Length: 181
Image (tube, rainbow, N blue to C red):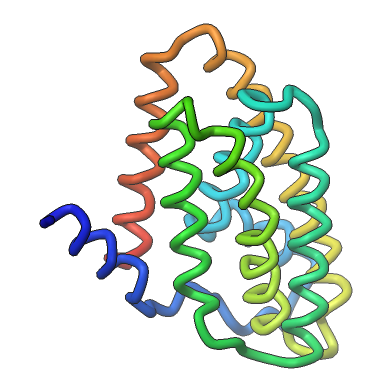
């Protein structure tokens, strides 16, 4: 019961994850954001790991990248959306759960592009109109590299179920840090 209550609180929390103000050097800001935004970093690495552990193909990372960019366009055009921050946190929880529950990995991995849509939406909201395209080019490029890095780590995790659990626990710890931050 306590675990269910704690999980429900995590899902309804609405911390501010976005990092607005990418006007001075939008390309550089876009390149750095997936590396400095812990929520984005963990989601991308986790999705790459899940891709290697489930389908062993790049279809999931490519769908995730496309969803992120599509979300960025939607955020740029329409602004903030209710529940965006909860979905971002949810992506970390789902990726962690997938690593911790191998029997549910494929099903949970398939949800990651939906969550990526909201990560991208946050990017679109935080980029100023004049900086959107350069910022987006930067965050898409680095996001692709992080997905590939996660895929490489996932290939190693296939042979070590204990390390898979450690990675899942690390994602949960990261979600707690994002929530606390």
